[in-house]
Image (cartoon, rainbow, N blue to C red):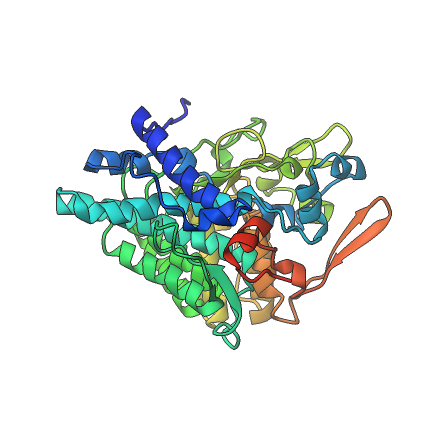
Length: 458
């Protein structure tokens, strides 16, 4: 299948690069004089609707700058000592849960994408054009900004806890492209309020489905809201938004139709994908290095097709992950919205809201598409706690290597019954990450701290 390559006009690739280079250089260099710098007025600025749409069509800088550090720090894989030693310093720090203030791309990349859409949002009112077309542009920008702010919050802010969200430190929200506006860390409550506000506003501006999966529509917005509310343990709203998304688009792939022997089983923009975006693949997650946790791999039943579609056997008897929804080889991670995630959000929300029948229906609908034809036995009514445990186990088995596991660990750690101690054994040295430990919040890039005065995470 031919890859869908999204191109931006040459002049806008150059213009966008220059604009965001100004932002990143002034925001992340160690020289304080750049704090007061203003963008070079000679730089060409967008002046037509086509210009703005051209920026949004730049997949590489709109859809492909999500952070991957959460996956490197998660418990779905392990590294051998030799592979660990061959990583760059920052990746070793992520993997072993050590302080890592020199964050570079995982911090600046998302803020760079936010800067692109802020430029568009501020230019849009100055350009004449069809209102419906402008609404779609604005809606996409708000969706992208919210999605990146949310992704940053999973790394650089504490997990959402209702009792302390109003005082816990959140992230620096970038709601303007003006680089002279000094960033200030918001609270966790304000961070999530901003994310939700952008998404809710975008919902009213967008069509149900945009026709291309690298753009957002109402379905993607509902899906993202479901994800956000689940991370906040707001199960009522998580369930409502998962239902809203699935009412508009609910396709599932029958894994019996997938070639399990293929090196890349899934195509980009496959039938389950609602919104396509990704995180660049770090060294630590390459197939040659990242070994799938053996206990996790053993949890798949013999007739569960995910055991052969998602994984491949290494020559040394270990297991590598290959079931990425990006449709490309390598460690690049799918971070978008897909229906399988939404069925699991629907199931968990229903279980937590004491609607076992709805939870079981959603779970069984998903799983019957994952087993060999005729072998899946639907789950029936079971104990409420057992049902929730089952859904959470299936969530881990279905959504691995999407950066979602880190958020799940953070939120589940707040429940003593489901908190988990993580360990790494590197050359006989055991590293431990306790539930709710400090390293569940990454340190902010030190250059940004030095320039802006942002309070560093401990």
